[in-house]
Length: 117
Image (cartoon, rainbow, N blue to C red; front, side, top):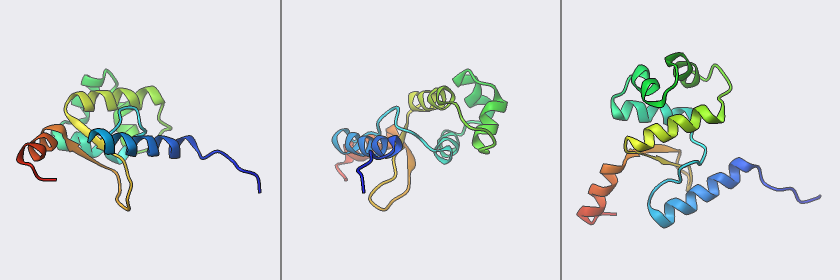
């Protein structure tokens, strides 16, 4: 059986895990999931309209993306990720038997300041 390269998503996920281990923060640009986008918006208390306005997208595009009704364009996902990251969201990649998640950067800083792991 011939060797074949792993899919790009697997490579991105490994890079994101390494970046998180080294820096304590998720790597920007690693592929995020639609569930993470919805969770990040909910964590911030933002409506779809607010996220769309801040990301310079239409609310229909955000709604369709969150419902997984369309194939998402990389530029759309990147705009959402950039907007949510600038608002303080940290995207946590799946790994070590755990699923992906989101967290506020201020929560991470508070944990580090208290000296807890």
